[in-house]
Amino acid sequence: MSSSGELAAQLSALFRSDKLDTAESSASAATKFITDKLNLHDSRDAEAQCRMLANIIDACVEEQVAQTVSTAVLSEVITLMSESASELSQDVRQTALNHLLSKVQQRTSAFESAIIETRQALARILISDEKWEEAARQLQGIRFEQLQRSYNTKQTFEVYVKTVELFLQADQLEQAAQAQGRAAALVAHVTDIELVNRYRLVQARINDLSQKYIDAAAAYHTISQSGLKDAAKQTEILERAVKCAVLASAGPQKMRVMTGLHREKMASSLRCFGFLEKMVLKRLIKPDELQQFSEQLEDHQRSLLADGKTTMLDHAVREHNIFVLSSLYTNIKFENLGRTLGVDAEDAELMCARMIAENRMKGRIDQIDGVITFEGAREVKEVSAAIFLKSQTTAQPPPMHFRESVAARWDERIVKLCTAVEESVDLLIERQPIYTKMLFRSAN
Image (cartoon, rainbow, N blue to C red; front, top):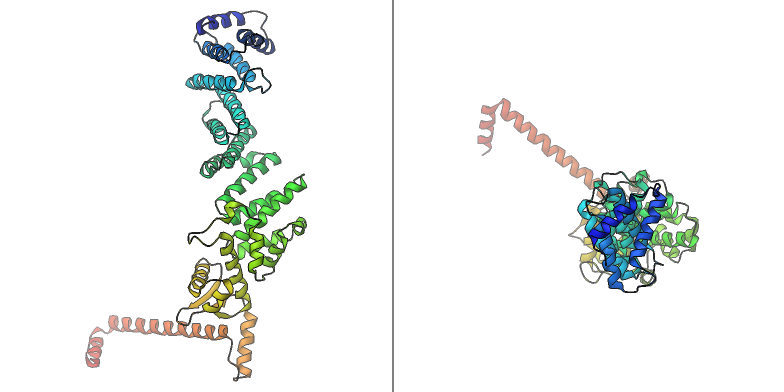
């Protein structure tokens, strides 16, 4: 078997021929040279093939071989190793590509294209073996931003998106999120709608797996509206959007997203449409309806919260039911609220307090009496109606929200009065210090 030095000399001699005056003839000569050396038709010895390929690759990076010759031969080696129908076994092709990568990485500036093509070829082989994470790491190793040549934005973006897809298939959420950040910087410059939708889909998936359900629902909804040709795919994505919207925390933003989904023409054909409609129409969700919807969720969406017994869906439905009750009642005891939600009074109070603190609901909590008074559900005209009711009759007690508003105004006036007294005393001490001292002395 020829050594790498002998092969380097043969390559140099071959490419000095006057007949190789075009890229096509050079590629043809390189292919013939590799094929002859491998002796594909007469030899089935995988070990011998690996050694010969390694020698050819080593010859290409010898200093005596011109850069144009090395590039042409290595390109044909990569092409041959990328052909799934090649007579070379997959192990031989993978071993040769790994050897090639180890050699050319030492001279990145000279072999940029070879590095990119080699990593992509290795990724395809690993994908065929369903080694998702290893394939993703090969593509992740292509650092377009560090290369001297500028590459097509679409090509770069597609590699980044494929990397994210592979990490997601390997259940590597953190790595997928990092790779998605690289793609995010280019998405505004890509016009291929199918490629952009692939990016949006992985972005939505990352938000879904990260339990950022409101962002995931909005992203899925956007994809479903982007003119997908496959009706089944559109239905699947719209259903994902509904599931994520349901799992999102209750509040105005969730209601806006769910209302938009409810208006979609295809929404009524979804299995989860009935559940969606009850939420949009602000109706209480019953335990049996919750159970039916839970069976449609994916495994990661059924994960338990920190308490070890409550799912994300349980939590979301309880918050929704609180939101519904806030529009039905002026106030309610936590004991009664907890009974409706299926939790104890303490948990009901904690949920309400969190929703109020996060500005997702307006209300006031009376911990002494164990009552929550809902605010913001009534318009100004309803308050006016309550005032009119009070002036007409004294037999019927005024609504709680009216009494609360009067108490709030009274508290505000007391604060203003105390502030005015304090300012007056400070002014008196400043302008009449002797008189003030005598006044306080006589008071004592």
